[in-house]
Structure formats: structure tokens, C-alpha cells
View (cartoon, rainbow over the protein chains, first blue to last red):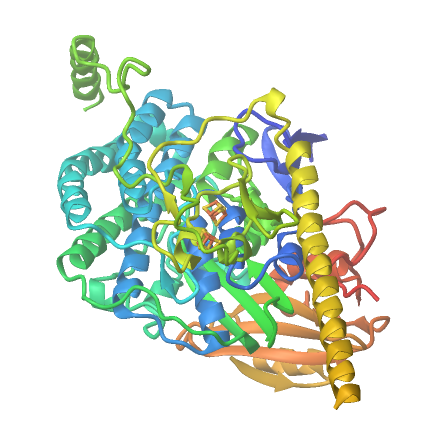
Length: 362
Length: 158
Length: 113
Ligand code: SF4
Ligand code: SF4
């Protein structure tokens, strides 16, 4: 047994997007143990939602939990609140919600992929992926009126309608994006330099994934079929619009990249189907009742399962709101997957987890 | 195989030198802004019925109405607090009284004292409303008392 | 959401009998301040039939220690550490200081008396 060293990475580090701290115990170059500290950005959002804001305003507050999956948070909250006040959302609103969630998934996955490339030392691919991502941001801006905070789902429905010309624009842009995505898949799959940093690195098996309750693309890359979109049909009709589960077997960084890339094809197909078959109905169900009882809702955010628990007490202010973000479930597996890897691969592995710390610490 | 790849990428890299840049030449060229961009909130005093529903709906509290002693209300809006969610527009019962334009808001300047100044203004606005309500209540009580004495007088006469 | 009401002594055995790693997905542990008592809820979800969300609910007094389920569900330590800091309840083998600083005013999610 060689001499052991402790190397900290974070909380401020050039390869991290958000404050996250890992303490690696290494033997020569191999990582043998990891400790994670993830709570640098605790903002007390749960407490604010249950004390300062009325339940209709909370959907705008939870949108600020995270910039990348803002629409997933607002939609999950809206669903839970709709269960509490017992209303059914109009069909068109459901479809529009799915549309924005999938557009959001495209930009979030491309962001994650670009960071894997950057942290593996492939700067040019980072630039290329970011260049191709721009179309998704512009489409989101056209649909929701803002690049980052969409504020699209409100309790009872959605805030804005999709204009026909915007729908046409989305279909046109997707047509341009398709060959670009093929090109990206080619590079991520076949590039020899990238494969040195990605193949067989950050490995986690399906058994470990089951044992540690992993969610999202992280789980699907190991072959564990965990996707909330596959499950719920009552809240959002995913299967109707052509959802298909994407699975891989290897469980390493490369497999995660491939899962994310192949999910983009699924997302594109879902978006096309939604725009071509958008049902006509109202956008919002109005009601004056106050939330009562307790309810839970699950939703597949770009990073995995998002879980909301809410309890009402017949007043405007909620009694309790619990947010469980996808990265929160993945922390135990994140710590585990470092073991046996070289310290030099750590940045690429972290990027491939796609950690979202502001979701985790709220 | 590797040789083929390197040759291909090499030629591509040379060709890229003659391509147009993908970034846009801001500020000479405008960035993409859709027609219904969520921009500044506008207010039309002539249409407003002063129901204060927009203030109640606003999540961050960017709208507040102050009230003078004669009952006239004034609208205050803070563009640095607003999150441009257009909840106020949805809550308003009178179309066009409050509306959203597609002009992006200007950034806040230090001279405007937008945080502290707004907090003070907000408190004062609430206080002015409370003062008006108290005054109204006092007047109503006075009026009721006056009517009562009148009635009593009438009763005494008859 | 299926609620299963149990008690503080029995909850660990219940979860041990119930939990199979390849059938159920551990979601999170949640706690709600009911005023006098605190309700702690362990959420599980079935892989095969996912709209089936199971919650083991236990009502405890604020100063009671609840058992840790780390030896059954390995990944539950994050949720437990979070509850200890945010709700100020005691959980077996779990120290303060994961979410908030150890010297922070504890239990921000508890109701103010
Ligand atoms: S747009 Fe939203 S934040 Fe801005 S004033 Fe209206 S309700 Fe308030
Ligand atoms: S909701 Fe509309 S009508 Fe009422 S006070 Fe606000 S702007 Fe005026």
C-alpha cells in the first residue's frame, strides 16, 4: 500500500460550474475515497414558500431554484398544487408543458455534454456544442419570452399560448439541428482522444445503481430503466407523443454522453409530434379553492426524477413544501463512482454527473 | 484510420479560416428578441379602476399603491424587483390598465437607490393606505354619531 | 400516495421487510411539523408501477430519536443528514453540520412558537 494523500477539489474550481466540494483520498494517482460537501448555496427556498408567498406565487419562486431546469420545477409544483386544489389541467396546457420541458431538456443536455468535452480537455468540441445549443435557447425565448426563467407553468395551466408562427419556426430550426446532432454524435462516439478520457471512466454498475437509488441519465447509462416519463400517464401524456426510453449498458462517462445524445433524438421527435398534433382547448382552469390535504408529484427533469411534496391547510399559504432534486438522489452514487479512477479524470467525471447544486441545496 | 481522421480534421480546420464567424457582431447587430418578449410593465392611469389586484398577485412585490388623504391612489413600480412574469396582467380585471411591452428594462443605477429607496417607499405606501383607512373610519364613525344625535333629536321633538 | 402508518419502534422492521432494491426506489425522507408532534415520512416508489408511491409515516415527539435506515437503504444518508439540520430532529448516528453550519440556529423549518 502506497502513501495516501488528500486532495481537495472545490468549492471554487475552474472545472466546476457551481460550488461543490470533493475531498479525494488518493494513492499515487488512484482515488480510493471521496467525501462530498454539496451545501454551499442553501437559500431556504422551502421555508420561503411556506411563509412568505401565496400558493399561486410559489410556482414563480420554485422556478428560481435552478436556472437550467426551471420549467421542470414550476411544472412539478403546479402539478402538486393542482392535486391539492383538485382541478384538472386543460389538454392543450399539458401538451405545451411537455413542449417546453423537452426544449429545456435539449439545451440542458447539450450544456452538460459541452462541459464533459471541456473538462476532458477538448475545448473545440465545447465551443461547437455550445454553438449548436444556441438554437434551443432562442426557441425557448420565442415560446416563453425569456431565455432563462421561463415562468411558463402556472397553477391551473400555462401562462402563454404557442403562436402558429413560433411553432413553424421550431420545426424549421429542428430540421437544421438534426444534421448538427448527427455530427455531434459522430464526434462523441468515435473521437479517439475523447474516448481516452471517457471510456471506462467513472464506472458504475447496474447493481450499484439499484442499491444507491440512482436517477436520470446517470441511471439509464447503466441499464437501469428509471425514467418518470415512462410511468405517468395521468399528469402528462408522454407515451401519446412518442416517448421512448433510452438505455445503455456500460455505465461510464461515454455511456452517459451517448444516453444524453440519443435522448435528444427522442426529445426532437416529441416536440415535432406535439406541434403537429396540438389539441385545441383553454389554457388555464380557473378556481377559487384553497389547497387542502397532502399530495406528491414526480416529474422527469433533465437530470432525473424531481419529487414534490406539498401539504395545504385551507389558507393561501402552504403548510409544507418539500423539494427533492435529482442530484440529491445521485450524491451517494457520485461519491462511489470515483473509486479506482485517476485523479486526472475527476473533472470529466464530475461534469458527466451533470450535478446541479442549487437544486440540491435549495 | 487515425491518419485519415487527422487529415480530414486538418483540412476542415484550414477551411474554417474562411468561414463566417458564428457569433454576431453585437452591438452593431441586434441579438434575437421575439415580438412578445417579456419586457417592461406599462401602466395606464386612465383605465385603471384601482382595485389593487395586480399588487396582490405580484410574487416579488414590485407594485405598490400609495393613497393620498383624498383617496387618490398612485401607482409605484420597481423594475429591478419585477421578474416580468406578467401575473399582474393576468390578474387585472380591466384590459389595458396594466400591460407588458417587449422593451427590455434598463438596468438599475446606483443613483436611483433602487433597493433602500424602494423599501422605504413600500413601507410609506402601506402606511399612507392605513392612514387613509383610519381617517375614513373616523369620518364614518363621526357621520354615524351625527346621524344618531339627529335621530334622537327628532325623536325627542315628536 | 399510499400512507402506511406505523410507530417509531416498528418502522425500521417494516421498512426492512418491505424494501427490495430491485423492486423499489427510495425517494426521500420528509418531515412535517404538526405543532405538538412531528410527522416523519419515508417515501418509496415502485419501479414497475411507479404511480404507486408508498409513504411510511410516523409521528414523533420533537426530542425523540428516530432510527437510521442506512443499513437497509444505503443512499438514505443524504436525506437523513438534511433532516437533522433543517428540522432539528435526532437521527441515530447522524451528526449536525451537513446542510448548515454546525453553529447555525437549528431547525429553520420548524414552526416558530
Ligand atoms: S410582471 Fe410579475 S413581478 Fe413584474 S410587476 Fe407584474 S406581477 Fe409583479
Ligand atoms: S389590477 Fe388593473 S385595474 Fe386593478 S389596480 Fe391593478 S392595474 Fe388597476
